[in-house]
Image (cartoon, rainbow, N blue to C red):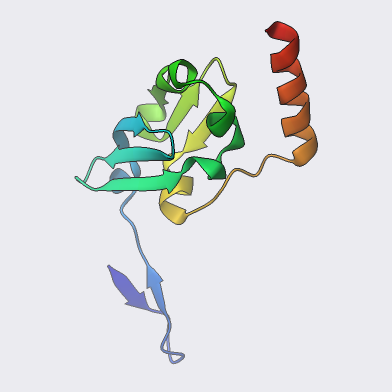
Length: 110
C-alpha cells in the first residue's frame, strides 16, 4: 500500500509487519532465499553477508528462525539476519575489523 506524503508527490511504502515474517529459508552457493508469511520469496546474494559466503554448505544449512520469524540465526557462524533488513535490501553492517577477527577465530578453531 502506498500513501501520499503531501504536496510533494512522494509516496511512502507501508508494509504490514506480518508480511515481514519468515516461514522458511534456503541457501544456495550464491543466495539466501527467504519465504515470507504472505507467500512471497525474497532472494539476496550471499556476498551481502560475508560470514555466510565464507561458511561451508553444512554450516549454512544449520540455521533457525528466531523471533517468530523476524530473523534467521546461525549459531555456528555467530550470525543473525533480520527479515526486515532482507526485504529492505540492507547488507551486513559488520566492520572489516570485526570480520577479520571472526576469520582469525575460525582459523584457530580449525
